[in-house]
Image (cartoon, rainbow, N blue to C red; front, side, top):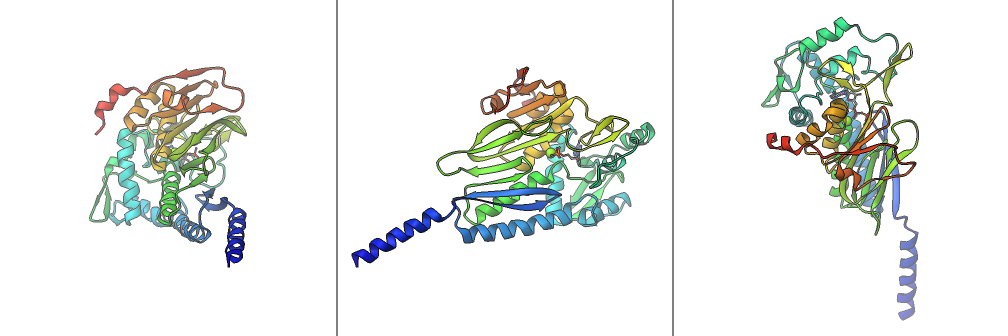
Length: 351
Ligand code: ADP
Ligand code: MG
């Protein structure tokens, strides 16, 4: 009997040691590959969670896409026609959360700029070509001034006071999707995981007795610029003006647009933000690219973001102390690093 127990124990131990502790799977959403890595998760819970995440991602892709036919496209058509339309709860949630982020970012994060993105050719899966839109077209869009506060939802009905509003959640949806995936993992009892969409990620728990170690994409070209340890619950999002752009006669027009003048943002290569919430980190990273070298501290404070790194086109790195404490440069450290606090004086204006 004792031998049987002993043998069972040995088999059990062998079985455990054979179970891989860190496992990854790739899913697709919004044209991006999202890698889900779990640590020490029971395989049945893991498989069920991943199946549910996959389904949720597919639904988000269908319903939230800004130009492939679906719910958001219908909503945009109704807004353009000056009609009221019923909005499902998930899209209503995206709108109300975006309204808050719009206000906090002083309008720099503005998902009502679908019309401008379309004008610039960025509502396409292909890289846009040819000359940029004319100054007149851009000015006409700027004068129409679509923004998030022109939307009102009552009893599930959406109305816009401006027919030029066209919703595009390209700067926000990936963050929300990553948050949703983490929520699903937790519902299945999985507490140690990373959901990583092309370098934008949220990590919970740890990798056994070590923190998760994650990289920050190098803004110019391939590879990793810096690395940091993440444990507990934290998101790392980078918005770059280097990946998607329009090119004409040697001039690049990047895909992050300044709603104030209708033009692509110049001078900022990338912004990386750390924040617990993926959706907020995603929206803030985009807003801080628009805010640029002179405005990022003010907007970061207003949005409640403590850890920011901004890299400008000259390669100068601007960081908050909260970021500097955390990151380690993996390659050669940048020649010029400027540490600056978010402008806390503005914090009083927050609700
Ligand atoms: P990436 O992770 O690809 O760098 P971002 O999170 O910065 O992307 O989002 C960029 C996308 O956000 C653009 O492709 C466009 O759909 C949208 N966008 C561009 N400018 C703005 C803006 N000022 N406010 C809100 N959304 C924007
Ligand atoms: Mg973003």
